[in-house]
Image 1 (cartoon, one colour):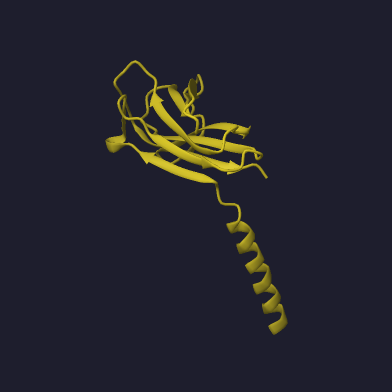
Image 2 (spheres, rainbow, N blue to C red):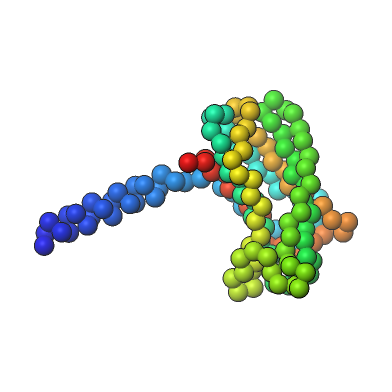
Length: 155
């Protein structure tokens, strides 16, 4: 019986060690005050990339409440490379289907919407700055809880 416990403890230890090795390269969330994303609020994410030979998966997650009243949200992603080159791209995050059903993962009154950028290689070593702007014509969007960025090495 003691031998079985030792084997079980060894297996659990190996699983814990391998699970801990899959941590993201970068993970940060920005929470909006009072569930309102104002136009002048621009979450910033600074990602330090040291290995340009590897590919990375980027996941941008927007969390809203079920009281969010739009079928999408346009965002601008501003990127600044370590060599100070800049780019600005617009992305649409669809939040509902035409019939009003939520797109994304709904848990209670919270809905998670994601944009995935898979297998991206970054050409320069150093710190990349990603600045996110809401891109609608109104000065604020309500019922937005937070936005997060996760960067993971492709295995």
